[in-house]
Image (tube, rainbow, N blue to C red; front, side, top):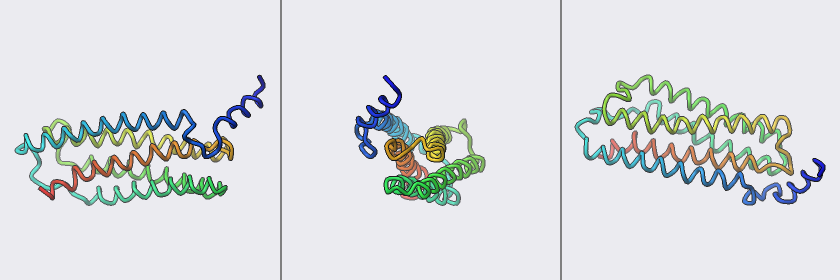
Length: 200
């Protein structure tokens, strides 16, 4: 069978915005469910230890100086990713590419700020239950941001070189689903480490 025929079969099976027929879509959905469960277990461990080992918790509230702006940066990156998907669906490829580049830049900034915040902490992973949980959970999230950034860079390259086209564009909503998941997880992590101590 010729390459042209194979391409025709593929495009008949998965139409441009018919992302729900894509195996990639369901793959990322199952990955999100699995990873979401892991984060739920980790956060449960934090809340359990916060009650059981309160004496080992830091006396000072965690600072919002870097965490709050970094949260805004990550949330804004979800907006630019969503806008990239919307623009491409409307046929505005240049605008889609611009927003994808902005998403990658914002993701890289988030990583840089998170590394700076880690460096500024007066505790380490071996400082006790709090330090161990803080660096495990935020580090696990950071790993997901790095994966999301690599996906964004790949989508940017595919948009640049025309790999993603009018008949093959499911990669963008699939990548967006993962990126939005990473952002949603950060909101729970941010609330856990930076907001709840002020509420107790």
